[in-house]
Image (cartoon, rainbow, N blue to C red; front, side):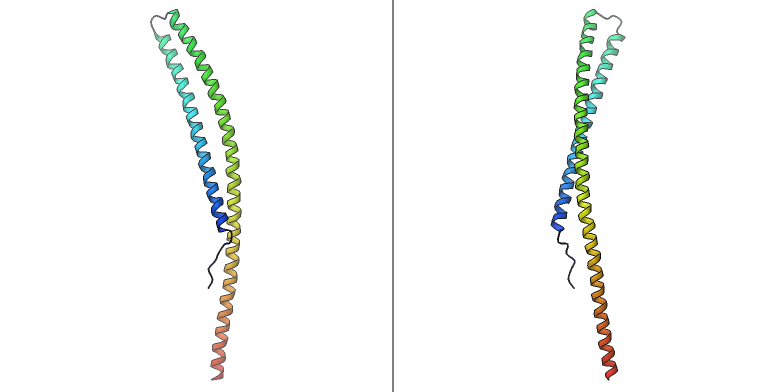
Length: 147
């Protein structure tokens, strides 16, 4: 009996590879996003620690307050830069999610088509087996009837 063969198997495999590549790209972007968030948290922590250290000191000089003020401006600038970068990263992630969703849809479409073709092949195979069994039974019945 002939084996089931899906004529679009190569296309399905290619689509699955594309989907996996797009998934990997999304994971890469998510990792970059986590790094940005970690950097933002580190900057906030550095600011809080510096502010605490200066304000907890018994004596604070004008020079130390000026340095703290300068550091605050630097922290604000870095925080704003990280926020802009995070927004760009979030947009890239949303775009990549759409790309992945579309690739997943394409794979599912081919998988459904393959499943339908397999079910059709199974029905045809079953019918052919039933016909062969019927013919074999009739042939044996005729032989038995003739003897």
